[in-house]
Image 1 (tube, rainbow, N blue to C red):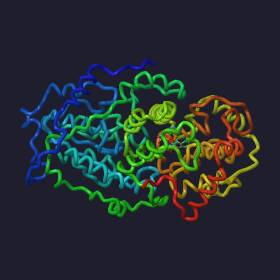
Image 2: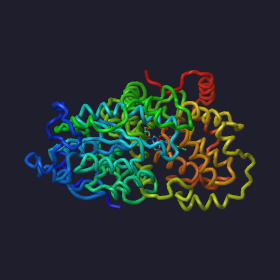
Image 3: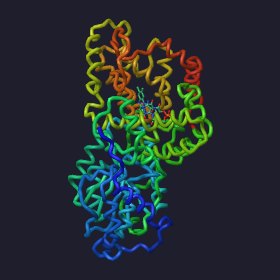
Image 4: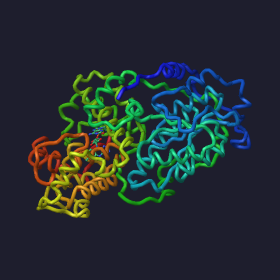
Length: 520
Ligand SMILES: Cc1cc2nc3c(=O)[nH]c(=O)nc-3n(C[C@H](O)[C@H](O)[C@H](O)COP(=O)(O)OP(=O)(O)OC[C@H]3O[C@@H](n4cnc5c(N)ncnc54)[C@H](O)[C@@H]3O)c2cc1C
């Protein structure tokens, strides 16, 4: 595969986007009656349109997928930013594009979020985390002159109807490679009547540069490093120059976490008090990571008591923070080189390998997505005796003979998190204790997605596929049940870190002690 470097057109448009003035607060105007209908169309504003800038902003760029082609509709009144995966108002290239296009077209920008109670697999704990994040996103968008309208329902229905209602000239969205995300985008593109562009806002290196499924970290790593300096750069913070006070008259839910939870009425895995969503909390965690953990990340990141990692995966999953923000902070810190390299490896190489897996492999949530060598060896060992077997219910309730495994499962039930090293062990044991690899895959993914706050993420699909189906791994010495899929034993795992301290810590949490991760 050849990795294209950033086209010249992009360099120009990026310079222009940075140069666009108007980073200050929007001027205020009194609200006019008539709501959205009173905003002039692009046609009426023609004198304020900067055609040259617009053309450059719309030039091909590896971070942008044009799903409905064209520039702003002259009959339109505003640019709509459909916020879905990148749920934030800072360091957000999708929002930046919406604002830059609005400014160049002389149009206001408005953001819409479709909040559905039916997101596949999402539980009460995930919804609480998400709605907490909306408050920060709303405040940051407002600071940049963009109102956020939250409506209840599937984005596939909300976005085209909203675009019609506000007479959108142009719609910008973010990317999301999971199945439901792709289906929403296709349906919205089908039902919109104006151009629709998608911006790959939650990866450092745009996924379009990796059009085929990568085999392993070793195949994607050199490709990422070759272009990293092109993409790992501070993101401009441009504000909308054409305020639209009438946006306040549009129907929308109050962006209040308790109120939204009451309206959603979702059940499932309980909320996790103290595990707080949103950009403010993400930045607090990032500062803590930089201050207290980064300079020993390479050495201690496998130690779960206490954690030495960033604990930012759920915030990354919900788009409350950009990976660019984290990577730049690490790169610009005075932490030892090996620590910076280690976090960039996880945050960019491993994370973007997972995105590539989900984006390019339609079976990403099934054992069938795993490599042929692993499927064959697992099939060859399908008939091996399985002396220890647990049902899905026994696993869920942490009723195994293995105190380390039970502690890991209890930690996730109670706190919505499990340390990376334990996740590997946890999933491999599910393979060992299940009737076959397919059902092990299903159970591991189900528990991961229901209880982990960062569940239903490309990293989760890749993590389970790695542990159970050898994805992104290589064959290891052969043994029962696993064949040549890598095995992890209790003995080897407990030697890697202080497992007794870990088990004791989880016992403390069970008794009501504080979980890891809360940030003062
Ligand atoms: C069986 C299994 C299931 C997993 N399920 C999930 C999941 O549902 N959601 C999820 O985000 N991660 C999952 N992971 C990957 C990893 O365990 C978590 O991303 C990590 O533990 C999050 O902690 P942190 O934010 O403190 O990570 P840090 O060590 O601080 O790393 C920073 C970021 O890099 C990324 N990252 C770190 N480790 C990995 C990795 N091994 N693969 C890909 N990206 C990584 C994450 O986005 C993480 O937030 C899973 C791993 C396994 C083995």
